[in-house]
Structures are given as structure tokens and as C-alpha cells.
Amino acid sequence: MFDIAFSELVVIAIVALIVIGPEKLPKVARTIGTMVGRMQRYMAQIKEEVNRESRFAELQKLQQEIQQATESAQAGLKSGVDYISEAVDPIHPNSQQQQGDDAADVATKPQAHSSTSVKD
Image (tube, rainbow, N blue to C red; front, side):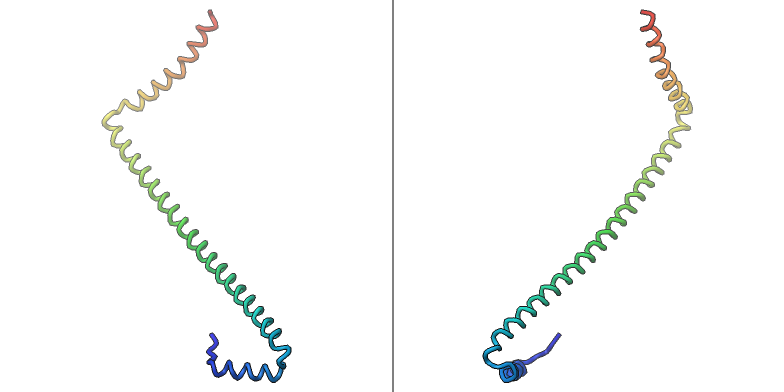
């Protein structure tokens, strides 16, 4: 970012020593060091937040891709099941009627059972 050579730093130190004076120079140096440290920590926090946001955006994109893949797989499985059930229906034409009869038998059994238990 800044390209400051060692000779430039020496010139800055000599000017600071002349302008500020030898008594106040250590205090000013500590203050400047503290401010530079705060600035570095602040920049590190900003970088971390930007990285966190980019990772979050990538995770959201990945979640959407996985959800789309899952929906596609579900649709494929459903079409496969539908195809198989259509293929089985011509082989067993009475299968739907038998299933309906079985359901009717199951529905009537509890009623018949409940009427016999009332008679007892």
C-alpha cells in the first residue's frame, strides 16, 4: 500500500524529533502505535466480516443447488414409480378392483365386530 524506504523513515523521525521535541516524542510514538494497532484490528475485523459474508453466500448457493437436485431426484423417482405402476396395471387388470375390495372388507369388519360385541 505505502512504499516507504528506511531512509524516508529516518527523515520522518528526525523531523518529528525537531518538531515535537525529545520530551514528548515517546508519548507521541506510543499514541501513534496504539492508533495504528487499532486501525489494523479494525481492518482485520472488516476483512473477516467480508469473508464470512462471502462464505454465507456460497453456502446459500450450495443449499439451493442441493435442493434443486433433491427435487429433480424426487421427480425422477415419482415418474419411475408411475411408469412401473402403469406397466403393472395391464399385467394385473383386477389389481385395482382387488385393492378396492380389500379396503371394503377392512372397512366392514370393524362394524360387524362392533355389532357382535353389542349383542353379548
